[in-house]
Amino acid sequence: MEWSACLDEYEKLVIRMTTPRVVIDNAVSSKATVVKVDSARKHRILLEAVQVLTDLNLSIKKAYISSDGRWFMDVFHVTDLNGNKLTDESVINYIEQSLGTIHPGKTTGSNGLTALELTGTDRIGLLSEVFAVLADLQCSVVDAKVWTHNGRIASLMYVKDCNSGSPIEDTQHIDRIEARLRNVLKGDNDIRSAKTMVSMAVTHTERRLHQVMFADRDYERKPILQPSGDSPVVTVQNWVERGYSVVNVQCKDRTKLLFDVVCTLTDMEYIVFHATINTAGDRAYLEFYIRHTDGTPISSEPERQRVIQCLQAAVERRASEGVRLELCTPDRQGLLADVTRTFRENGLNVTRAEISTAGDMALNVFYVTDAVGNPADPKLIESVRQKIGVSNLKVKELPPLIYHREAEREDQTAGVAGTVLLSLGSLVKKNLYHLGLIRSYS
Image (cartoon, rainbow, N blue to C red; front, side, top):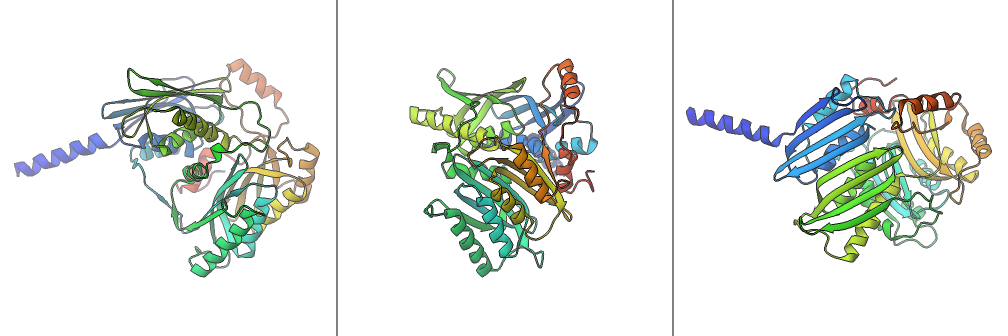
């Protein structure tokens, strides 16, 4: 009996040692909610922690990461996209629960949907052709993300049979879908780099998109469109005495920036031992102390250059140029094909897209430029809105990054009277809705 009691106490100790300890504090900082995570050090655990926060569209204003021996500590200063502290108890509880049950490397199911993975050479109108093929094959797109970078396109789409509402499992139907999409993606002479894959379960969507574009070696390709002039600056140096490689990234700040960088370092099999993330104005400064999984630092100039190229690509993939258009309308078969065809017929190029549905409503976001990557003519945008529906297709501006002094914030607020701002509701609550934690996010 005594031995059994000792075993019980030992099991409790193991659970305490291996379960992350999460503290969320709104009193430490006047500007942000502080999230602290202590846990045993495991490969990929930093990425999992950052993923939890970014999936809720939270802005990480500061972060301190330290790994001492076998213990790991993260401190994140976070706000919502409007720069406010977190006060919604459902959000706070979800963060505590998710960070406290991190399991590195786990996969997520597709929620009864079929996942389509697409890679190819980007061109104007390509997305409309893809959606037209899916509509013709009776596939309903429930959720999707599309990224473009350096002339390449990658997408992960979740579809179902539009008649039965069930996942597509018939092998012959799947073969037809893959063949038709591959034919569209290859264009005139790109059969080698056009790829399609169908599965029933995938990893985290955005993590997978980074992996797909990394495998496609988009970082080695030259940009087709003229760079914006605000390219990320990445430096890599070795700290020989301590056996670290020190990586510095300076770029324009945006949401999910830390996730994109950490995701790429993780996929390249580097471990972050220490890191500091700071923001000032609209700029972000990230510093990482890394080693290979075998404990060695970067050992050659080609490897150093590859890290620089890959991190630059990681930052640029999501930083798509263009006007943000939000489509909110009752969902129907062929909707995406019709909307993107209208874009193509009016010379608009889709540089990034986020497709989602909530009940019988379609909630879609498109970033568009003109055919050569320049800002689209406002008159052309208005013409497209007239054709699709002015009340359905809105021109949106991203919420301003809240890092300025209070006076500057007030000036900015006064200056945006009449400007159309984000109106699809709280993005945090939207994500909780999709996770099934709340019934509505209106």
